[in-house]
Image (cartoon, rainbow, N blue to C red; front, side, top):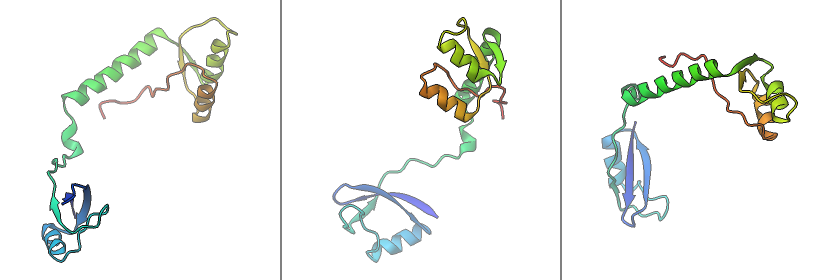
Length: 134
């Protein structure tokens, strides 16, 4: 299968899939390729960006992002109190002034995170402990 970016004579741009390059040409000549906006069959290929494999995207930029995530994780561990599975309760107590303010981290379920966000408790969900090099 091959995907082409196409343009009609009225300037509408769209894409479509074909079995092959020859399949595209055959359908075009038979008048089977039409613009989904205006239905004209006066179609041409538009300029396309190359399709780049995800494997080739492991660039210096992605390496820097992984390093930054590792730095953030270490910062949180060094400067915040670990409260484990009590995170939601502790965050709520801090938010409502029931205990002194301090920086914490721990675990919470998706439901607990959603509830905290609904209550406008200032949290930043992160996934710590991941292997960012994988």
